[in-house]
Length: 297
Image (cartoon, rainbow, N blue to C red; front, side, top):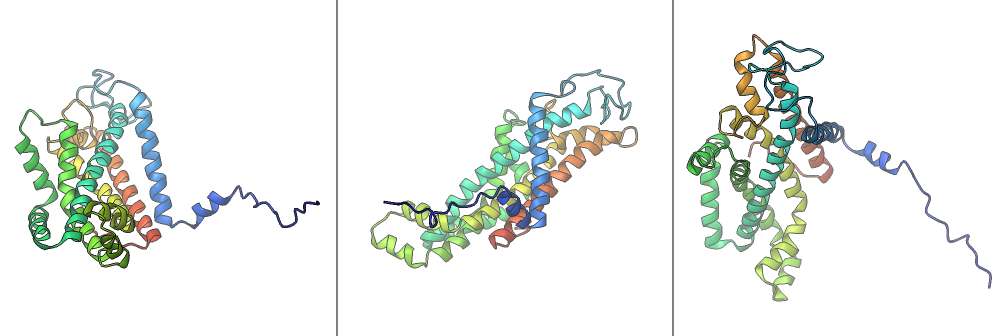
């Protein structure tokens, strides 16, 4: 028996396949991805190495300005601003991701449950959501931190919890709207006829079909998180010093704008570029998935 291989052609190997996909992606997505990758690399490096200790004092003449040894200058007690900036990078990213993930878990669960069940449960949940949404981000976060008491003030876990609770109502509203649309589909009715429970229907039928909407919502909230965390740090309600956080660093050096402006420009530009990167990434992601993020919600 003779084997012929004319019809058994191997699939050609295309080493530039990934490059082709990258080129096909939208411009904002690519720019945002590059910015975020740079921030991620910078954060990882800062976790393990900095030119000086982030709390090390007297590393040079205070307020001596930028130099080769201190590219971002020194603050009023001689701490190297670049070292503090590098170490604080991973703190901003970890708090932002952890807080947003917590908000997604809480908001998605509550929103999908509310949208699917409806009735009195939906009415109660929506009144609570509307009440919390009516309060500005920062004001609600400050109320929660003050209510937690001074013993927990400055703890990273509290910041994560506050960010998650602030974002959860807005995420719940988006998840509810998506769930109400999916709940009328035939496959949900079939699952109900099979006798599947509420949680099974939510997590096996509704959640997978709302993934695109929720993914865009996650990236959108993630782009707001550094601003909220930075604002809390600037007002003195963020991470407890001397641990560097970019909002705290701006607050510590804001009186030095005339004497040594570079001490403020470093963390300020870092925070701004991170937010811009997240926004561009979100915009590109929403275009790729065919979704439109609810900006300002």
